[in-house]
Length: 302
Image (cartoon, rainbow, N blue to C red; front, side, top):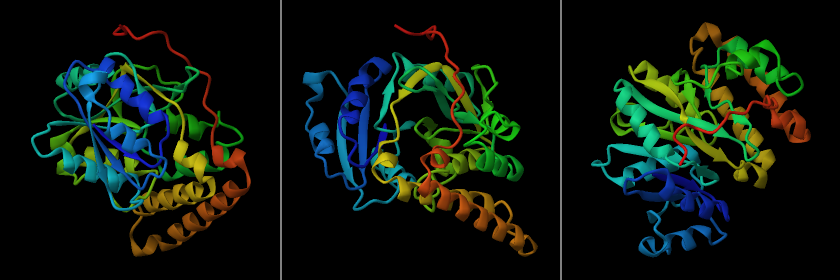
C-alpha cells in the first residue's frame, strides 16, 4: 500500500488500525511523505508490527511537498517491481472489513481491468460518488457552474452518476482516495501524471488506462469510509486554486489544436472566475452537495 501523507494527524493511526481487518494477506505500507511536521508519520514508522498485529510501515520522505501524484509514484517505486498489486489510499480512509480482499477477488473476475475502486461513504454513511463518467466539456462546465447551488442539475447527475445503483461495473474513472491498481497497468501508463499537484490526477489516470486498453471497475462489495479532506481544510484557498488549475490542465488537453485556442481561453477565464469565487465562498468551494444515498451492510462484512 502507498499512503501519501502531509501532517495527517490521528487519521493515520485509524487507517493503519483498519488494515489487518481488511485483508488476510501480509501488507507493507509505504508512507510517501510530502513534508509532515506533526510527528504522525514518525510515530507510525516506529510502530511494532508484531506487537500491534498491523502492517509493516515504512517512511519515504519525498523531499518536499511534491503533490499527490508524484508522491504516489515515488511510493509505488519504493515497493519494488516484484509487487504485483498496489493500493493507493488516503491516510484519512478507514478500510472496511475484508475490503482489500474483496477488491483483489474482483480483479480475478476482471483480468482486463487495471484499477478497482470500492464503495466509499462519509463518516455518517452517505455514499460518495467515487465511480464517475469521464467529464465532457458540456457536463464539466454545467457541473462546475451549477453544482454548488443546484446539485440535482442534469450535468452533475450525469457526471457523478448519482442515480446509478451500486453494482459492480465499469467506470470512466475511480476516486484516487482508495484505489487498487494492477502494477502492470499502472506501469504501462507511467503512473500518475506528475503535472497535477492535487485533484484530477485520478480522472486523468482513469482515462489513460482506458486508452491503453484497461478497464476501471467499481466494486461496491468492498466498503471504506473517507473521513474528510484534511489537507484541504488546512489551506482551503491554496487547494481551491490547485483544483481549478488541475481542471484546466485536464480539460484543455482534450482540445489541443491551434484552432481550439479560443475555447481554451474561455475555459481558463471561466475556471479563474470560479477559483476567485471559491476563495470567497465556502459554498462555491464545497461544490455540489451529495445526495443522501445510503446502502445496507456489505454481504462480505465480518
